[in-house]
Amino acid sequence: MHKGLLKLALVGLCAAPLACASQVRLVAADGSHRLVARDAGSGITVVLTTESWAGDSAYGEDLTIVHLLIANMGSEPLLLAPGDFELRDRRGFDYALLDAGGAFQAIPDGGDPNAYVQAQLGYDPGRSMNYETVRTDDAELGRLGLPWGVLMPGTQMRGYVYFEDVRETANHAVLVWRPQTPDHRPLAEFGFDLHVSREL
Image (cartoon, rainbow, N blue to C red; front, side, top):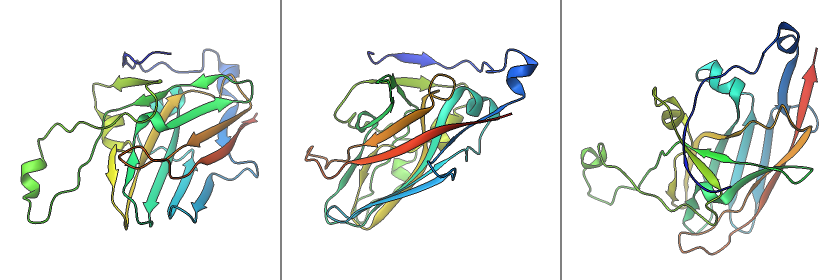
């Protein structure tokens, strides 16, 4: 899939009352909604939470949304980039990350924070361009999304990451993140096994 600009329309998944009668949720293997992974070598900790979307419920119905808290307790700067994440089901089908365009930048010592308020920040796409750019009229996805940039040692960042919806077409999927330094040296690899729970 090539990268392109996607204008997201809010389209409900339930086309009939019967379809709306069941609950479809993304969970861990034990049915919980939180997964924690730590890599001792890099000092990176990731907390992934499913079904925690705090925004417009229509987005939650149309997208697979996970919340990530990423802490960099290592000694290397850590690149957060959309092209370093992938979601794939057990059949090998990929579900594109939807990049809402948020970004951050560390303010240099003595710098004026107000000078960065209106700045349009660019960011490194990461190892792959296999993601889509998404913009919404209400800008909610960008405001609540995990921003891209360089996470310095001793800091953390959090936000939502959006993918094409896996829940209607698969029973299992793996979310993989391959973090790297800003100069593209691999740091670790994280894999989160996710399951689709369907309850009537």
